[in-house]
Image (tube, rainbow, N blue to C red; front, side, top):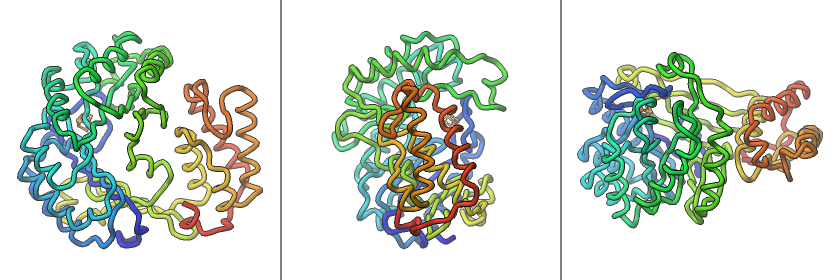
Amino acid sequence: MTDQAAGTEASLYLHIPFCSSRCGYCAFFSADDAADALDSYLNRMTAELHSLEFFPETIYIGGGDPGMLSPKQLNRLMEALSPLAGRCRELTMESNPEGVSREQLDVFASHGGSRISIGIQSFSPEARRVLGRRGSIEAAESALRLLDSYPGLRISADLITAVPGTHPGDTCRDIDRLLDLSGCGHISLYELDIEEQTALARSFTVPDEQDHLTPAWKHLDAKGFRQYELSNFCREGKQGLHNSRYWELKDCIGLGCSAVSSVMQADQLFRRTGPLNIALYCREGTEAGAYETVSLQEVLKELIMVSLRTETGIPVDRISRGWGGETAGIIEQGIRRWSDRGYMESGRMKRPGLLIMNTIILDFFDLVDSLGDLRIFQPLDTVF
Ligand code: SF4
């Protein structure tokens, strides 16, 4: 797979795997002791950007913590992105509150940056202590106020709920605080996922997710946010385009450590994961990563899994075009079964279904497995 193989409307993801410290719950690829390598990393990344020949529809700079980039380093990165960004409809950068400064936002906004995704997680001292979040609540508050003074930048904030030791109403208070401080129009609300091998997994039992999620979802409804994906809520016109494209399995080119590229071609999905080693990336680039070809079964499972999370639900018509009417019919049987039980409606998950998402996904996976070897009826790159 080459980066030029991506469709003309592909998205671009850049991974900046540097953090100033390690959060207890984190399973992302990032390093908290490698900031010295940032310039070398940017050398490689800007060289890779110069070699790209497509014009991404969305661009996302994620991490790690891109807030670790100094204004000068961010300027280098944004200048390398500029020639590619002519057709870009959304250019997002993640940042932790401590990385948000007027100098950095000036650089970002002046190069066409349109959206900041800020990792607040919680305003509760207890939750922040359990999560191992460095940085003060005051820093989070002043970062939000500063972001609010840039009318051209849309704000998305990450919050975490169901943190051990917190109460169901705490997330509602976090939402209120967030909206008091800024005109934030997009909230990503994640339940704490205690991944194996993190410090948290060894220390705590997780509270019941449902007790925390249900009141938080209702509170977001009352504040005028629409749940357009299991963990993502937006006000009118503030939906995140980059992630929405990901949930539709649109092509994406990822550059940097652990960055995933996904390109659909005729009857296969090609995937590349950037190297999990900063020194190796600096020497050899994203191409030194791991490659796989995803089978037709697995592509169908992925499509079902991501679409069940969204408000649009399972795209039966696309499944019918790509995998044929018989396959689509079997998937419709699953939709009917879960609709009869009150968990789905018109191919979409209802809220009770969202709370038992994993059970429902596994049931659909069994249906896909029952189909045996699949073939395609229309090239997949024309279906997606
Ligand atoms: S800032 Fe984000 S990427 Fe870095 S350690 Fe914390 S959760 Fe992980």
